[in-house]
Each structure stands twice: as structure tokens, then as C-alpha cells.
Image (tube, rainbow, N blue to C red):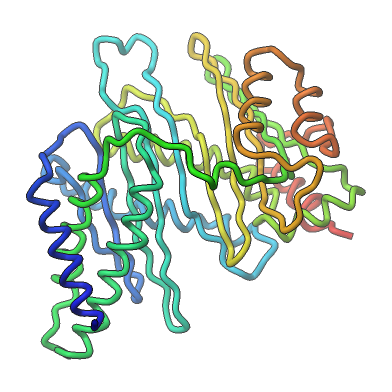
Length: 366
């Protein structure tokens, strides 16, 4: 069976699902495709509600989510780290009871297709009133929608040459794709075997917001610890990992404001990055009281050999919650997560402090 036949059959399946999909106005849903020329093609649900200025700003969001400047300049590696997944929980601002919305979670999924000649990305941003089964949506993006676009562009270009209107084809597939994603939304989240995989923690980030004043600290291995040197090739850099939570928290808030949703504040829950066979997960828990917020997150890496300190995500979550619920001290929590991590933290509140982290943790590897 040729690729074009496969594409047509899957497209018909998507079209069938499209006809069965009810129109919903209580979600944010955008699907973006970056082609080999780095041009963005987009489909944004209910985009007619956006002004042209805001629509143009929304179209630029994939560049911001996928390619922050510091991710390249602050990395120890010449290889490209990809942002695969970002999840935030949304909480209502105080005194907003009369202006309640319906959103509960906001997340982004990126599918990357790489060849020797080019890289394409299929990127979605979703704001939902439910705790979605994200893996189902991720599978549909990576196993159906993205391959359809790739195969269709390739086959039609070969067969039709200049007569093939790639922009039109991509736009039609994005429209079908966004309906397919919406069809699978609303399913409750399930436990998958991936969540039982074990990770090692190479750092802990504590963040506080009290009376609109923010502060944060990074905890990791001592400078002379051999594990510090071993951890560096497994992450973009400590500088990058320290900046990511605030960067994406602010970016999600910016995204919500473009859709005129102003009654929430964002809490980063999880960020996933990858680089060929390397995988990094930043996982965070938080607690809020009268407008003040505390959060504690762990920088996790996948290693080929598990150590005595390797744990799955549920165990890390337990230790984070115990600390935030005042059931354990910070020192006890760090010891539970990884006893090799020092309780002497690095302040990360100014550019000077971040540059100091980059110079001493990332560059001074001898």
C-alpha cells in the first residue's frame, strides 16, 4: 500500500471523526506546523474571536515555546535540545469567584520530525477544563497528524510538482487534525507504564512568591562532587534548567492574556526536554495560601543504570508534597530525593547570580 493511500484513508477517518465532534467554546486549542522553511502554518479554534493583532501574536507563540534564546546560548552542548512537553495547572486569582472560568490545565505538546535535510515540528497548545489524558492526544499528533502532513507533502510534491498547493494542503490537514484532537479531549488521565520508569535527581529548585516578591534557589551537587561533572552532559545546563520554570510560567500567562483570560495564575507542573537519546524531566509541586505561593521542583534525568537513589515520579511527588505540607524539613526532603545533593543552595534571583551559576556549575567542570 502506497503512502498516499495510507494518507487518504487516515484523512477519511479524521473527517469522519470531525463530523461527530461537537463544537466547544470552553477550550483553547491551537495546532501549528513549522515546515522545512521554518514557516508557521496554523489552525486556531474560535480564532474569529481574536483581533488581527492578537491573532498575529498567537501565531508567534510556537517560536517562543520551542526556541527560547537561552536554551541555545546557555547550553553546554552543540546538539539541539527539544522542548517536548510543558504542563501547567491553572488556579483562580483571589476575589475572582464572580468571574470564574472553566479552565483547569494548560499544556503544550511538540512532535519533531527530523531528516538529514530538514526538521519540521507539529505543535499544539491546549487549555482545558479537564485533567486530560495527554498521552492519547500526544499519540494522535505523533502517529497520525504529523505523518499525514509529512507523507502528503512529499507524495503530492513528487506527483504534482508546481501544481501542488502545499499551503492549502497543510491548512486542510491542520483543520482535520484539530478536530481529531478535540474529539479525544475530555478523557480522564490514566496511569501509564512510563510513569513507573525511574529517574535520578540532579537538582532541586525552590521558588517562593510572597507579597508579589519572588525568590528562588537551586540545590545541586557540591562543586567538587564527581556527580556534578557526570550530570552536565545529561542536561542542557544548570543555568537553563533554573530559568525554564519562570520563563514558561510567564509565557503561559502571556498566552492566556492573548485569549483574554485574565482570572488565573499559572503553576508549572512538568517540562520535558530531549536530545537524541537523552531525556530530562522537570517536575514541580506547589502550595498556595492567601496569594502567597511556594513550590519545589526536581530536575530529573534518565540514566542507563539505576542507582540506589533512583525513583519514579510518584515517589518524587510524595517527597515534594511532604515538604510543602510541612511534614518534613527541606534538609530531610533533599536527603530523601538524593542525599548527594547539597543543602547549600544557589540564589537565582538576579542576572548576576544566574551568570555565577553558569560560570561555576556549568563551565568549571574540572
